[in-house]
Length: 292
Image (tube, rainbow, N blue to C red; front, side, top):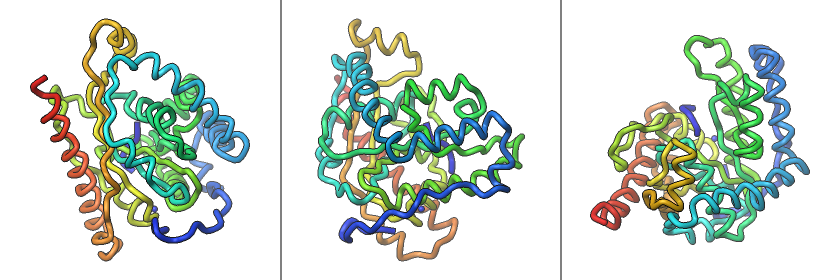
């Protein structure tokens, strides 16, 4: 769901949250009219009462239909690692990316199997979800407007990357402060279409930069068994489709990276470390399910 794209410690008390930042005139000005409307609607849906309403919908409606479509196949491991995190410090979930439905399914599991307060955010490419009214609709019915903030990284529209400066600042803010904030991120930057469920793509440095700047809690997640064909995925729940497995690892200690300089090399090393932790969970899945 996320593409290539930043200080609180889990042991420090929560501080007063700063007001949500907004884009500068020159940043929002590079977007087209449809993209600007899509952004402002989603921006306001992720604030205050509107965000609480969207979260209510995710918890009681969105998670329900995902549960009904997967309950015969779902296997979850390590969910207590999420339950035991500090709700006053944002939590970043870093996961492998095999299916368009990865983070939707993870969010359903979180809502139905934990009691912690949650506000979900999934940074996403702006293309389709922000430049097309149909994309706005998909963001509503699938993510309750949680696919935010948007990044415009299409090579043919390089000028729109000016807006990404805002999105990076906003993402860092979401990862640095906010009670119950959970941010879902795919370090690979794009879906992996390999037939090998345990293969992983190289990590992109963007998530390393975000985490280096924000110092959130970080938990690795490995996902297997989900496909990209929605009707087939749903029917598989009653026709014996592949088991869905979601593994939540323990919080990752990253101080060794915070002690290094704030530069691209550090960001990439941090991102690679995250992918290695995801791969470790994949090996646990291989041991348990590959021969079943």
